[in-house]
Length: 411
Image (cartoon, rainbow, N blue to C red; front, side, top):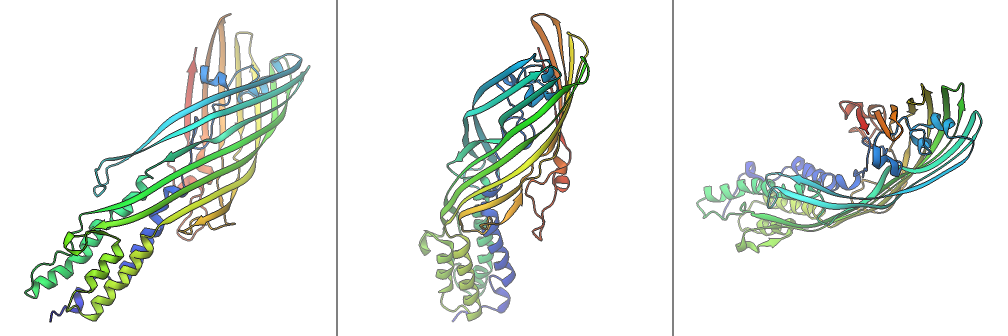
């Protein structure tokens, strides 16, 4: 009879606990944190008119899309009613590549097509002498849907990690058997893994803006307004069919828990080792079981907006706008949550950051316009849903090194 010493026990309780945490948290991290973006900052879309696609720098525009870009400049539209409806159709390809050592076929590329065929902007303004009253609608954050048919690297890495982890855990069993004068059983020779994964996400932050502009003088005008933001994020994902490629002599491809039960049936193993193997098998059953998530998040927030416009001359115009940080608390409406990441009814923050934009528009010739813009996104002061180990919301100052900014120039 083969006898193994206690110091060859396979998996300690702490190891099993860590394995469970990894399998239930890391498997779906990206599933619940993806945000789809179009143009602008980390969470802010500034592609808010078809004209933007032409010039990219609209901070000092005197056109109707100034409702978003330069609302103080609307006083120069001329008396009467002004309307604008435009649409952008947007398609992007997203590719996420991972060179994690244990992935099959590393480096592995995970690709998805992001689509937003309907991306509208609606603006209306009524100018009466010194006053202009305006309103607008646009998708100020998110605005697309993407499907990763093979999931994401964050799904596969924990599964791929099973191969070295389980091989390392079984090595003491093989060594003890060999040390007892028996042939090497090769329990540690796990050669691969298998899984199916998919992820689809949709995100949109709808903005409904209203405000008033006033011409203090022919040169200087100001704006005061606000935007109601309604947010909706939808997540659907699944992980299934997780197996390992065990040695052919012990059955080949099978669930990891089943393989550990086969090892536990080896004649002569001490009862303590058998119990450890069977306990680990039960943990693997839970950690590698099929998992699904179907969840929707919704929330609202209000963005105060101020602006100023200085029309130096018919040739030169300068515009500036500040949008305050938008606090948005997202509430979960969850149908399926096998990993307890989005408990139904729970809330988390999904803010839009404050933003400052300034620009100049120069018309040296009748048919030539030069535009310059600078946009600064106050990301670090916002909350994007990150939590600390105790589950408390933390702002971006601990997760983002610097605020983001862009320069734009066009002729």
